Length: 110
Image (cartoon, rainbow, N blue to C red; front, side, top):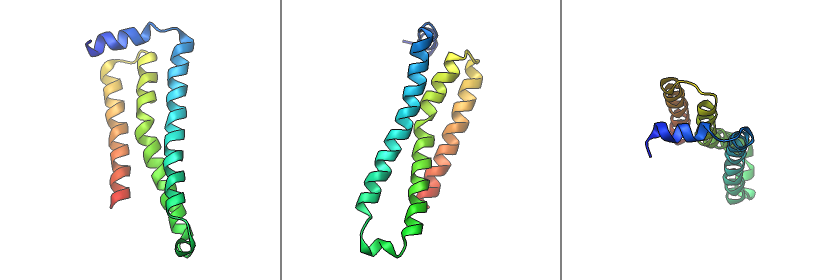
């Protein structure tokens, strides 16, 4: 299936299905990073981490924002397709979003 026929099929969906895809994607974009941050907090909690709790909290926020930014690209792209934006504009916006998310991952690693 070519990308243009895939986008055409997506545009033919009923409006409630489109809303469900976009809102469900954003819900997953919140829940997945929240679960990963929760796991990170569980693994880095204890008396040895209490002295630097503020730094760990800031790191957890950065982790959440970076993961949310990467995952939220998918429902944002779907919303752009549903709005009927030109393919070049959608590709440009998604590349910009991917670049911003990649910078966030690099910032976490460095």
